[in-house]
Length: 85
Image 1 (cartoon, rainbow, N blue to C red):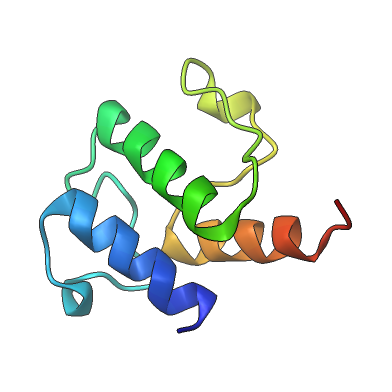
Image 2 (cartoon, rainbow, N blue to C red; image 1 turned 120 degrees about the vertical axis):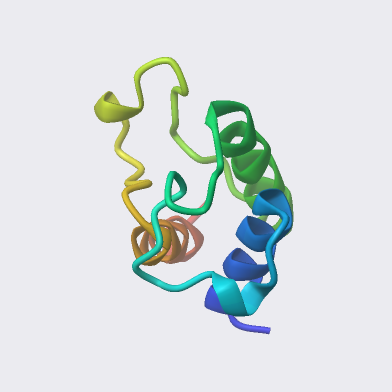
């Protein structure tokens, strides 16, 4: 399963949608995911990919991790996964 497929599955589960309802241009807001859902998504992504996402839910605009849409989240994960530990 690709990063894209895994992220879409996680986001869809959190939004209570089918993965086919989640597009790369979907924002979490478009999908009905609130701030608590965002935190749950981040925890699930960190666990799935064994990474630590530099994200502060209190000030998401100051984060180095872009959550503007699903494609940006996937790109951020790919970047973190490719970094040496």
